[in-house]
Image 1: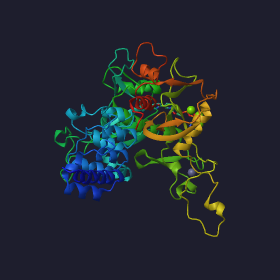
Image 2: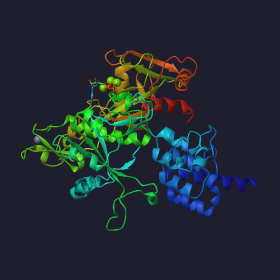
Image 3: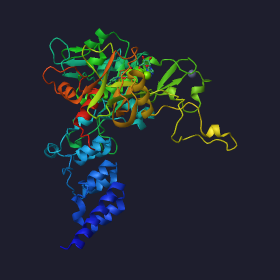
Image 4: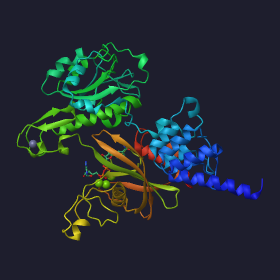
Length: 491
Ligand SMILES: NC(=O)C1=CN([C@@H]2O[C@H](COP(=O)(O)OP(=O)(O)OC[C@H]3O[C@@H](n4cnc5c(N)ncnc54)[C@H](O)[C@@H]3O)[C@@H](O)[C@H]2O)C=CC1
Ligand SMILES: [Mg+2]
Ligand SMILES: [Mg+2]
Ligand SMILES: [Mg+2]
Ligand SMILES: [Zn+2]
């Protein structure tokens, strides 16, 4: 092979890689059909087309390369697969696609344990079927269906059974499931709140054990799930359960972390919606009484003159509070900033976190999406000082500086977690510090420190005598710390 031929071939590889990096799917497909051997080629950078598409979030290109049978397990000079790269850059849909594989292959992918990238409380076990919430006839039929599953809540705690003899939940907590006959009296009570959670997702339709008749089309519908919150005495409610060791856990922050991933997702959904009902019994706009609608996903004001009945108002729907939670990395790349609140168990440090705030009067440098304004209005209206929601990045910078005095530069989203105490969405980020002096706000944080990577590894993997402890694996704080430790610094 002459040097000229070689460079032509190299040039073709670089063109192919460039198309993948830019997300140019037609170009990727054309080149592949002309030269199929391009599929797994590495360029000068040591990256394959799959890695570049995964890096830049080009889902369609990744999908096409995978469908052509490309090698998902090849690694770059930092030993990262395309899966690792997608995960690092927060392209979860791509890491899910690359991680979705049979059990045999999953072993091969480094760090490919899917439960690691999916945070606790995030699994969508049920199909919410939100379109059915307005279908009263369907919802009523489902309520009396013998296959329907009911979960009972008292004071926002679900009834659970525990395998521990003393009733203390030791990691094997299960939701108590009820059928219509066991709860139909509760459904008649005026104080009862009923929330439609969704229907089971069928993995294997042929293995159904449903006793309900097929629908007109002959398709058996999967069982529906509802959550019931009632004012009946907890001790009375417990008598309805035939299982042993039933209880309503008393300490949500601890006890709600003991379900398997499937049930944790259902609990998060049910508890957040029920918590909203418990706090919004009256109309936030005019103070009148409200009625439940849409399968428990709406409260409408009973005052016919209320403003909330005109148009769509967010006060009528369950609320979610966004919270940023961030692992701040030292400019040297080898230490991270962790803090502790007074209420934490002794020796525990965690990521800093804080509520995203509405309205930010900082001067903004990026463009806004604005409502259309009359062109004769002053320029001030086009570059408004009007309050607008804080961005995730701004909230990260503000909270870190407020709580620790450390200034933050780049911010990168990693993953998020519904946190049903009562209804937060924890938005997990990595952030890089641009100053290192710590000055804690003692109202919020008792202490904050830079921890060297090795000390963090000792804590994470419970090495000999760790200097501090971190929150349990079910928290996104734990997962962010783990993510940083697992990540190579040269990406
Ligand atoms: N899943 C996880 O790994 C973690 C979850 N969290 C959750 O994040 C949440 C926020 O973290 P913080 O450091 O407490 O926030 P923060 O730093 O913003 O301070 C909380 C204070 O902000 C005020 N505040 C502003 N907006 C609020 C709102 N919508 N609801 C309640 N208080 C509001 C209150 O005065 C409150 O005391 C906590 O509720 C906690 O449950 C916190 C750390 C780890
Ligand atoms: Mg905070
Ligand atoms: Mg704060
Ligand atoms: Mg705050
Ligand atoms: Zn009202």
